[in-house]
Length: 193
Image (cartoon, rainbow, N blue to C red):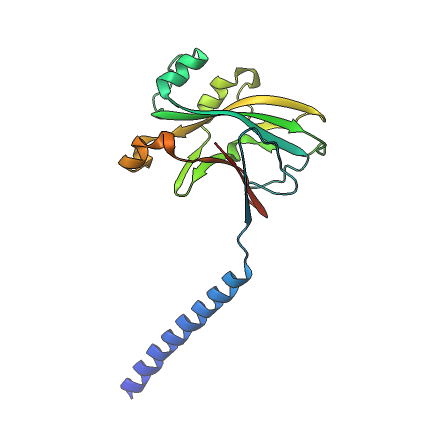
C-alpha cells in the first residue's frame, strides 16, 4: 500500500512539473521581444510612444553629439572639479546629448536616471553625483520637462567600475561598441557611441 502511495506522490510531482513547464512555455511564446533600432551618433532619435523604464517620453527627441571614455581624474580635470567623493568609478563614459521638446504634453518629461550605456552584458548607469557636478546649472535635477520647441545640452557621465568587467574587456574598453539605450519597449532604440 505504501508503494502505491509513494508512486502517486512521485507521479503527482512529475505531473505538476510538466504542467508548470508547459504553462511557462505557452506564456513566453506569446511575449514578443521588442524590435531593436540602432542609430548613429549625431542622428536625432524621436522617443515617440516608446518607454524606457516607466514613462513615455512622447514629443521628445535626443541626439548624442559626443562621447568619450575618461579616467576619473581626466573627468575632474576636464570639468575643473575637485575630488569630493570617497567611492568613485575608475573610468567615466561621458556622453553629451541634446534633448529637445518637439511637441510634448505638459505632463511629459524625461527621467535621466533611467538612461544607461550597454553592450551585451556590459551595462553602466548614470553616476548621479558626477552628473550634478558636470551639469551645475541643474542643481542635481535629473527629471526634466522642457518648454515646447526648446532644447538643452547635457553631459551624462556613466560610471565604469573595473571590478564589473573581465580583465580583457576592461583593457579593451575603448574598442567596445557601447550604445546609449534611450527606449526599451515596444521598440528598443539604441544610439551607437
